[in-house]
Length: 134
Image 1 (cartoon, rainbow, N blue to C red):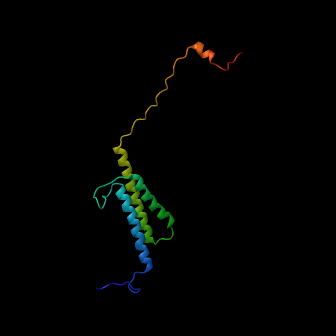
Image 2 (tube, rainbow, N blue to C red):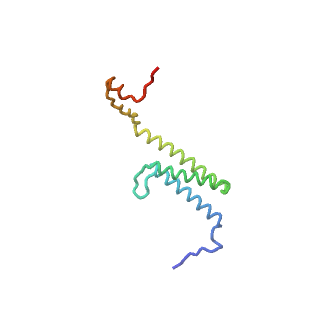
Image 3 (tube, helix red, strand yellow):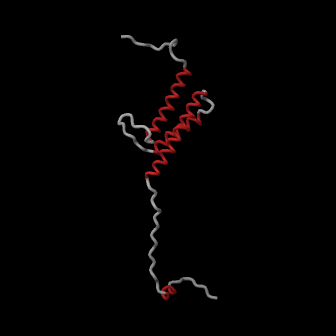
């Protein structure tokens, strides 16, 4: 059996490793968002699903990453994150508009008017507590 050991000499530099992990995280978040928007099928079932609230959560996480890492990314990482964010946002807008087209707008229901009983004028006068006299 031959085992391959990663030694200090053939290991990628730490910065490259962190950059690759960051790119993997961004792509993973974007893929989850796209899958939940119904843009890509689920990898195990092959079926598409649609959960826009969950998809928005993944888009929000990417926006948070953009905000929190500002000034700490290499130009390539920053460009990749910005491009991914733009793509995912556009897909979200498209998915949201598709779902609104599929669901017809319900007409606003008119609240039921209360039923008022007609009280005779004489009875109405006797129930008054206060009256103005000039």
